Image 1: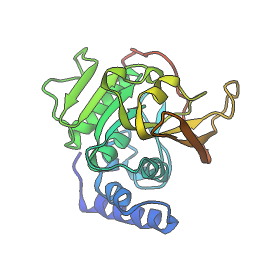
Image 2: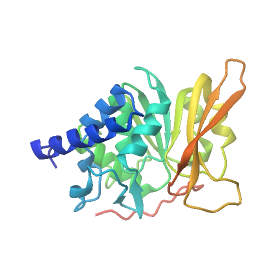
Image 3: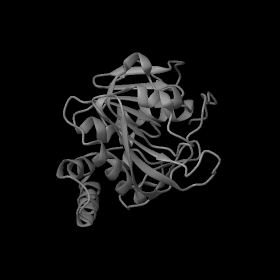
Image 4: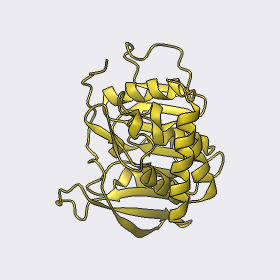
Length: 242
């Protein structure tokens, strides 16, 4: 699917609406205006791509609404060359935003179906150039330029590539995984939605910003209550993609 003047115009209107909220940096708004979100939504739902709402993607998941993507990205405060870990690749849209801002992105997805969808979308959007057809391959990781995609368990993070300047979690965690805190650089920050308590099962979480100080301690602040799909353990290798 190609970009078009129609989609570019819709992105421009979306950015103008987000800018009115006054929460987001100019560079984040520029990224939202540049990345073709319609390529990342499920086929047939392209008309919804530039509305500020979650949209269904494969594997019964959703792509976060643009204002949520913008907020989490803004909180990361990415600088060109930063090494960023993303937990929950989904359809690949957030990954594309991080890449556009100059980050080297390491992204983990637990669902094999979505892992393949993300590869397909990022390739179609022109952000990665895989050397093989991953729709039929059993490959569980791909490295292309500054985007590195992995099939894995987000609770474990990616120790072999740590430490990271920032970590972003795009699903609602029952608690803050210790592994992710350990994989932050001093001065790095973790942006993560967390249930109100480990036992509290809900589709609403508190978005938290956790900063690792130079002496290895952590400072946390609550941002606001939001809604994310749940963060689950393990790897789901059920492949169901057309």
